[in-house]
Length: 123
Image (cartoon, rainbow, N blue to C red; front, top):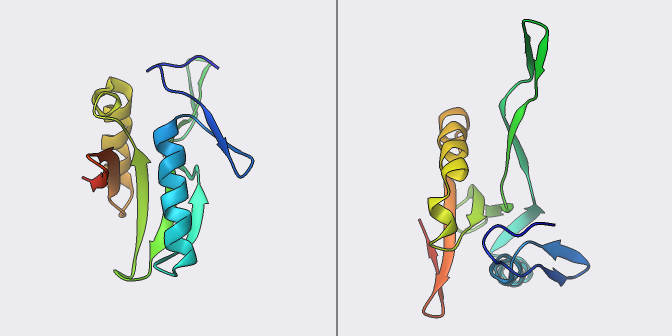
């Protein structure tokens, strides 16, 4: 695996996360799930942004966005789709394009989450 932003892959509960930050968020969400604050925690939910298609005999593959987490917030009574990003990776051009396409197509807002000064910050 080629690491784009010098992140360190981490394994927790037999699950490989692409960064320590993402694995830390997973542990936090598992705790919220144990406390019944959230439910139906899913990892790596995939969203179709554009179907595959053919043009002049050439096949163009589908475009998908894979979030880090999806769950139901029991306190707010709504679905949450999250992507864990450092302040650096949030500026990535490909991510910004996929985020715009996701926001256009899906009703659930994509929440960007990072960790700063010992607390989770959601945007």
